[in-house]
Image 1: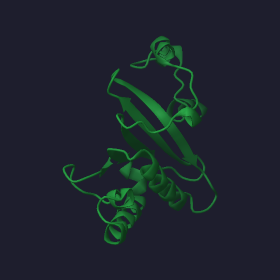
Image 2: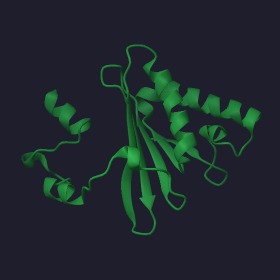
Image 3: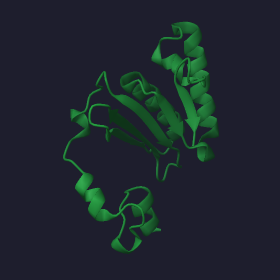
Length: 155
């Protein structure tokens, strides 16, 4: 429904349905900035979150950064992949690109609609491990334990 779209995709919550995310607190926490202004900072920790959807809504990819100096979290980049064809493969390519740029500590993906895409990312990571070595960010797309690199975690 339109209301579900506003809540799930646009993160807009009405006064009657504030629940945990009360509008007055969300608005007070907001700051003006453009994603284009954000660049990777060496002391920050980044995470990528992926919500797989069909072509109607598109796959949403968000990158959240944590600034250890002030303890704040900030959405530093966001992409929605929505094309009529090959949306999921385009999303996998975008995730690989963002992985190289932001070097996240982890990538969290929605397993429900993305089981095949997870396999594609893991296969790409395994292939890149063989050709580029374990220190290349592309090789980190495979599932590994947290002690040796990045983990693709399923939500």
